[in-house]
Image (cartoon, rainbow, N blue to C red):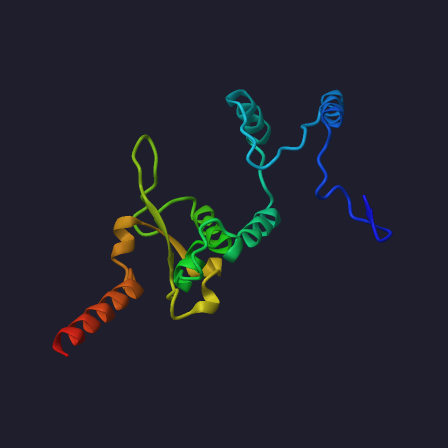
Length: 182
């Protein structure tokens, strides 16, 4: 389709039944999937085939970052107008998850205080702990050398465990008290 001498493509045009069959035949002959249209309902068999194609494929760190950036902010499916606190944005970022994974791998998925490790049906919940506070040293948040693997029990014994959350709770309690008094 041409408008004013410039090719616009097939925008707004519908394929005839004959053309649709040609596309389908060509895709089958070449062994490629026909274009999947948004909202198309797939059979369980087809879904399973697609799942098996992608099963076991590892995405590169670069590709994970691209996907993460593409689905951030207003492009994200759970976007509610930018109401998420900065703390949650950082803790749920791909950069934080990669840092966490590197700390666990370095420490061999073992608590560095008591030596606890998941094995033989015994589950140990591990936490990546920031040696220098997450809130007070933002430049060190993603340094692997600033992280240590701790089990849940040992993590609770650290000086700055849930320090920021306790501060927020205290501030909220003070605000409630002030509202009641006034």
